[in-house]
Structure formats: C-alpha cells, structure tokens
Length: 338
Image (tube, rainbow, N blue to C red; front, side):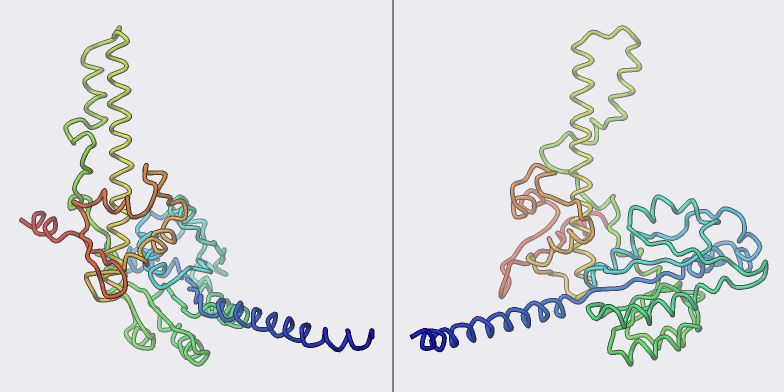
C-alpha cells in the first residue's frame, strides 16, 4: 500500500514543481519588462561647453582650477531621464575639486560622483574613457538596463555608440547646442540638446494660485513687514495673527510646489509622447519617480484623484479610450500669453 500512495503523490508533486517553474519564469519576465535607465555624465564636458558658450571660447581652460559657478540644471536632465523609465544608475565623472558649488543639486538628485584626477596641468582627466568602460561593464552586469543616456558632446563617444547599439540597448545623448559634435549626435538613437530640456520646465508665472488659500496680497514677507512697522511690544492677538499668516503662506507655498510638480510631470510626459493629453494612470508613477517623497497625504488629500480635482483651474480631465486623460488647462496658457 505504501508504494501505491507514493505513486499517487507523484502527479501532485509534479504539478507543484511545474507551478513553481512558471512562477520563476514570470518573475524574471516581469524583471525584464521593467526596463531601467542608466544615466552617465561627462560633467566637466557639459559644464565647460556651457561656460565657453556664455563667456567665450577658452574660458573654462583658463579657469578650470578655480571654483566653478553652478551652470547646469541638474534636475532638468534627471527629470528627462525619469520620463524614459526608472533610473537605476545615475553616475557623474569629473574632477570634483572645482565643482563644490554643485553639491546641493547633485545630492538632491542622487548623483553618484566618480572622482577623476587630471594627470597633468594641460592633460585631459580621462573621464570619457572611464565613462565608456563603466557603460560596457554595466551593460554586461545589468540586463534590466535597456536605455543608456550619455551627457556629453564629444566625438570620442562615437565608438561607444556602436557597442551600445550592438548590445541591443537604446542610446540617448545630451549635449549643448553649440559645441556638440554632429557625428556623435547622429550616432545616437535619440539626441536631445540641453537647451531644449530647459524649455520643458513650466514657468512659475503661468501657474495660478491655489483656490481657497491666502492670495498673493497675504504673502509671508508682507506679514513680516507689517509686524515690524508696528514696532516692538505687540500684544498676543497681533502675534497670533502673524502666526496665522505664516501658516497660510506656508500652506500656499506647499500647494504651489504641488502644482508645479504635477504640471511639470504632465509637460514632460506630453513632450515625450508628442501628444497634449497624457494618461492619468501613468502620471502618478512618473511623479513618484521625480519625487520619491511624494504622497497625497502630505498635501491634505486622501487619493491622487482628489488631488487632481483640487487642481481644476490648472489641469483639464477627459475620458480616454481606456483611461482618463489629463492635460494642462489651455485657458491659462492663453491668458499668460495675453
């Protein structure tokens, strides 16, 4: 009888093993479908291009060992990378001794810094070689990275483009409009000029103030001035009024930051897809990639839908073929242009 029971249990074990294998295959398939982005910065190259563009050719070479002013909008490039997918690698190469003024922007955007010293006063620091080696190594180690972004305009990256395309990855280049080598730009699957990424950001002047909050006449600086004009020795009611104005101004500031974030996300998705309307279902995950701390509760809302409803003066919603779609309200664009 015992052998018969063992024979009866074999089909059940086989089915369990098959289900387990199917589950493993599905997990690896989901990992493969979750294509990630790798962002590599030739930081000194893009900074030098912008500096020479603003102050004349050769300016960076003459001042490269001095502390450099902040010229690159790091957030604009990172947000563009996020529009292509989740960023798995965000790595910048430079001699960081001269770029300490970028510290806050680099930390805020979670950029991994790779120090590359120059071997001599007039020699190149070799950041391009180190960058290319890292790209080749990362493509071999991380199969989920499907999009490679290189920030730099040198023709030295053309051999890299051949290898990236041969590996079946998508190559995107970013460089300044004036100094980018056109052969390098054409060797990419897609190339974006740095200046065009800046125009994606929504100007604050085009964003309406949030309804239900204190208007611009009650800004925090105004309340500060009024308290100082009344002199010292104010009574408690005046102090309470000042605190209320401060809290109202802070609430207005938070709501304005939320409005900016949503509008910038819609603009980036719209610009990426070439359509004015974007799907609502894809908006929140993209905002979450732009700002991992984003939560509706931080702004006093229970759901993302409630948050969008509160922005009725800023964005428009319609029912699409498969999901609701949103866009920046056209009436505000025309009003700002007028």
